[in-house]
Structure formats: C-alpha cells, structure tokens
Image (cartoon, helix red, strand yellow):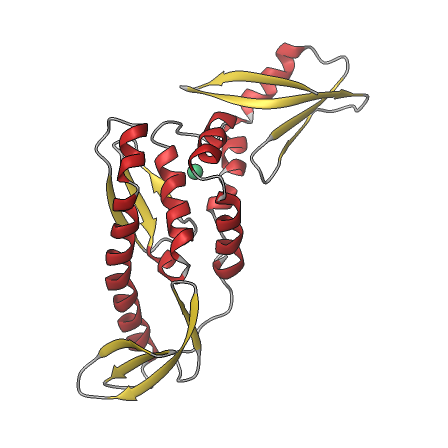
Length: 235
Ligand SMILES: [Zn+2]
C-alpha cells in the first residue's frame, strides 16, 4: 500500500492506495478515519485521483460519522421509576404533583414537581430546561479548562454555544464558535471534554484528514475511549 495525498479545497485528502486485479475502483473509510482506495492495476494514477476528488465530500462525511449518531429509538415515557441519564449516571424519575413546576437532583433521583403528572410533554419540557441549566454550567467549565489549548491552536477568539441537535455532538464554525449538543449533558464529563477537544482541533484542520487525527491524538491520546463511552451510552 502506498500513502497518497491530494489537494481538496484548502485542505488535503490522505489515503492509502492498494492495487489489485479487481475491475472497478473502490473507496473505503475506516472508523479510525483512514481511507483506503483499491484500484485496478492498469488504472492510471490521474484517474484514481479524479475519482477520489469526485468522492471527496462523501469521504469527509464518512470520516465525520463518529461525530454523528442515530437518535435512540426507545421513546421515554416520563413516569416515576423511569431511568434518565445525567453526567453519565442513571437517575430515576420521581414525579409528584405541585402548584409549581420544578426539577431537582436528590440521591439517585431526579425529583420532578409538576402541575399535571400525566402531561408528558410538560414533564419533558421541564426536564429539558433543567438539563440545559446544568449543561450551561458544566460545558462552560470544561470549555474554560481547555481555553489554553484553543489559544495554542489558533489566534481566533473561541466561544461556546449550546443547542439541542438531532444528529451530531458538536461543530466548529469558521469564526471560532464551537457548538455543543445539549444532549451531551447526559454523558460523563470526559465525553464532553472529548467533543470540545475534537472541535478545537478543527480550529486548525477543518476536515478529518490524517493531520487532524494526528493533532487530536497528540492533544487527547485517550480520545477513542471517550468516544466509545459516548457511543455506548447515547448513540
Ligand atoms: Zn469533526
């Protein structure tokens, strides 16, 4: 296998080229982000690069797959006794009726006081509000602890925002803003840290090239463990 690299936009696509006696050219992206192109022996190299370039967007998307997830299919029912995650731990809901709506953490429970305990939409809304209030505190703390890294990596002023996103953990905008999925408040802090470091590395490399992964490996050698944990818990 030969290591190759071709320019793509303002970045590059790195791939390994394998030659064999197959009839068609194939491209495979592995979970670690490495890309292997298998081409027929007689295909000229220019043809190979042409094909890789035409597939560049797809390759980049595949490499980003681990930052994506399929939403869980199991619907929550928002009844007492049901388990909900917070910072990587399971807590049971204890729902009681009250004149005021409130959510509190106590022991192994998430205590929810609600005007109508049969109104699942309302419970869901209050719980999300509570998750968000916790996320703002914890995400900002973890982010602030990594500001030194962001400064090392880029001159850009970085800032943080939070959203409920359907299918990704985070993103990094060209202006330096890093956006985190509020859903991450259900995962351990090390997973939030991993997503933040991943996004900060995008301040340097806006793609998932080998260079990006080298940087991530250097800045957070154990990132794969956190990624696995995150996927086991939430994806
Ligand atoms: Zn990424």
